[in-house]
Image (cartoon, rainbow, N blue to C red):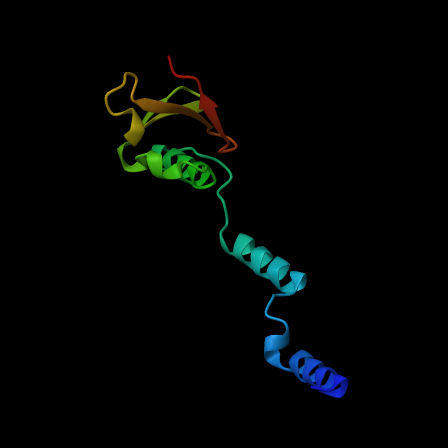
Length: 116
């Protein structure tokens, strides 16, 4: 092949839709902004169901989220907070076998508690 062929081949590749398979950063940022705006997060957790939902949202961001059994969680009303005990599948024959979380009723923020 002569050098002219490489130039023509490069021009054809650049003009084709396969020339650039990666998305532009603007497209990625727009998609993330739309998905974040589409899922509104409630401000507080005034009920037990809202506290469980807050725990579910918190655990979705954790790398070991599949170890928690959120459906079997137990919540206790502690005044301004909910204490939520969530069983873990890797702690089956261990005591305690539940992870403890504290959910603020006003803000809905979740805090991990130490378990003894």
